[in-house]
Amino acid sequence: MNWFRKNLSNIIFIFLLGLLFFPPTGKPIKIFIQQMLATSPQIKSENDYKQIHFTDWEIQAKNQNFIKPLENLNKPVVINFWATWCPPCIAEMPFFANLYHEMQREVDFYFISNESWEEIQGFETKREFKLPYFRYFKEHPQWPINSIPRTIVINKKGEIILDETGIAKWDSKSFKNHLKNLSNSHN
Figure 1 (cartoon, rainbow, N blue to C red):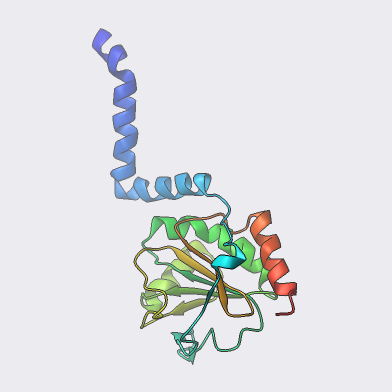
Figure 2 (figure 1 turned 135 degrees about the vertical axis):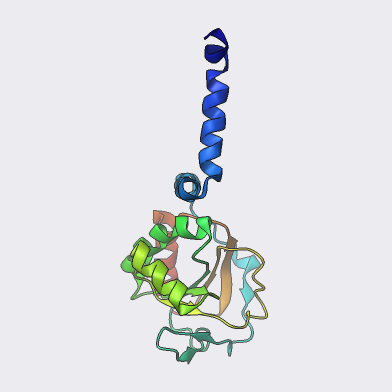
């Protein structure tokens, strides 16, 4: 009994660690922890903006039509590369859902995966995130996807103002205000 009391904290720690690595409990726990640790994304300074190239890049919409999201930049653009199996991607989806539903008229959103439509539809049904999902078959030459989630924000001038890998709190007040300012700018 004395040994048990002496090692109780170690036993609890090992048990909790085991929950993280056990698939049915590990993924929800990882998602919850990542949501708790998410911070607001940081916009680059204007000196660090990069002009986009290759505006003829295509992605596929749900209706199987191909579109060129960078061809006519009448609004700021938010592009998120994600996957249904990725815990950080899933963790940031509630933040994106809030942002999208508040700002979908002022900003163009593209949630892009290279998975099948069946996998994307299954995710959408299970998680109930009603977002504009797309597929890509060829990476944009300017943005090789080495890690996900990855989010790129482009202003109306065609400049990349944010290129962030990893989870962020996309519905933060400061980020929403920045998008509103981009939307209201005349360039």
